[in-house]
Image (cartoon, rainbow, N blue to C red):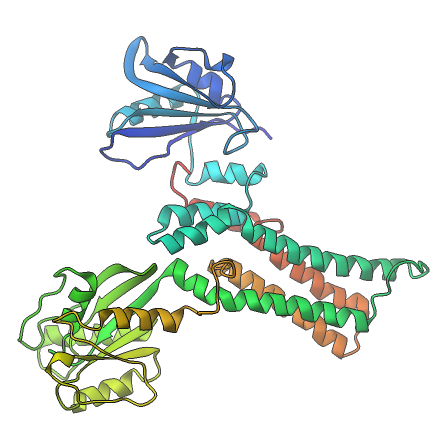
Length: 448
């Protein structure tokens, strides 16, 4: 498949020691050859690197290292050249402008990966894994991303599709050639256990995906409580830095304070909120309203209470306000005494000031959200799009089972099974429409 030649910077813009410029397309090697002084790239073998100078009308732009990748042994499966030049804002820009004047085109976001997908080097799950690797903030997120890159997700989807195709094929042979005695007759008795087994396997994947999604996307954890109960001290202690102002004056925090932390491999966005109470202060009232909205969208609420003092009406109101949310009661100021037990609640006693009990709190958060039975090998489907499509396939297989129970004709049941196969194909891109592909790759960096 022939494409025009594209160019883009693959490294981040800004001051750096080095930058990498990618060029891909049928004319990539010959085009770069025209702007360098050094060995002739067209005479070099694939996967060789050479020292050269980039020149513009005999004026040296930069000294560079040039790597040649000949089709199909490149990232895009086209001819590719990578130019490693000095960093900074000007050098790479001048080289890219020179290449564009010579006939290249500035690549669109994600166009290198899109070409790799179209030419069959990667599937959609691998492409999405590239984004996840770039955006990973924890080791666990990186491990999940590599499952996409390595093809583990594709292999699992292919296995499900193969099982469906085997069933569909036998049904259709029986429909089209009923006189063939050597073909297994796909009766309802045989069909039912096969589909039930498929659903069981998919259900196990979906259950494990909840933990995978949490690792991939992180948690939004909102810290709430009445004024002066120690919310900001808890935020600072968890972050191990003085992010929020802490005073003895009630109402010090008046707006949301957000920060991210790596909680033993789990990405957590912590949000410290204004103390919730009735107040005549206009600014504080706005902060209280924002705190209540943050509670509505939180994955987890840390409701902080003062263990050294009696519960107040404000505490009771907050217990009522957050009762439908997933929450942990955090009994702060345990160093000053302990007065309360909360039956049937997740309760962790701490002293934010003295940094007591923080490890217990971190472990409690992990225990709530990460299934202890979900192993690393189970957590394949963490991407929301993947989970949605495999759930859709599961529902279509379930519809086929319902049709069996309703004694519908076999040739009608196969329609649901074909739909399930196509839904699974959307995960890897076998049956994905062009609009989705364009949307997915547009979210990539320019040089990807």
